[in-house]
Length: 231
Image (cartoon, rainbow, N blue to C red; front, side):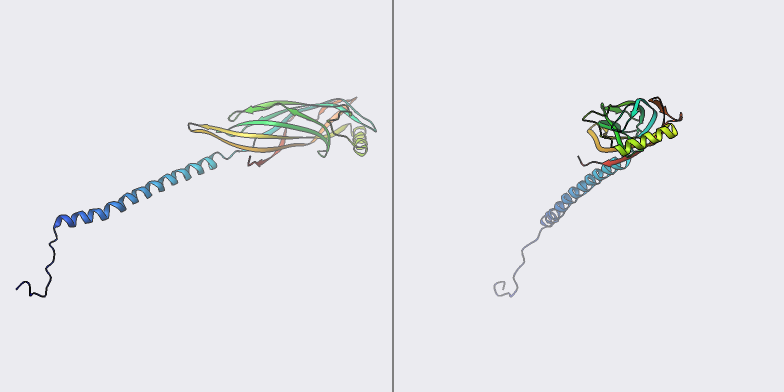
């Protein structure tokens, strides 16, 4: 009878085989899901840390104040200008989480902020968290140094006329320097390098017999510009 039956008998299916098959199909997606979840949280943590560092530690620009300015041996003729300027600055770091290192410091004293009269440089220095630093700068020219600016006759004449008519000369000082913001962590040091430009203009100095000082006792705030560097 079985040989002549048109139906093919089915193979027996056990419960054990069914259980193993279901287990095999669910284990692989679970491992993949765990990996993707871990990777997602790792990327989220990294991005959050980067945002916190960039937002919370965006460098605030330093403050520059001119405390005093004096000039000695100041003479003007038709062919040259000579003088010795002494300037005292206070540089303040408003950042509570980053110190600032200043380097490659160059400064220029000019007439009315436009025509350079003398150039000088200063040693590197650091300003700590929310700290201040007093910096003295000395400009000196006799009119013959090769590394000092050449002052043209029209500027010399204008300076001499202003000094004779008002007893004052209007100077300006500009400071250019590199500044590096630094914050140390357990895993390393965060740095950002910027170029700062500071200008102190409209500095009326009373000049009598070749000597003089800044008119007014109040310290002068200097405008500061900051340019982010990719270096």
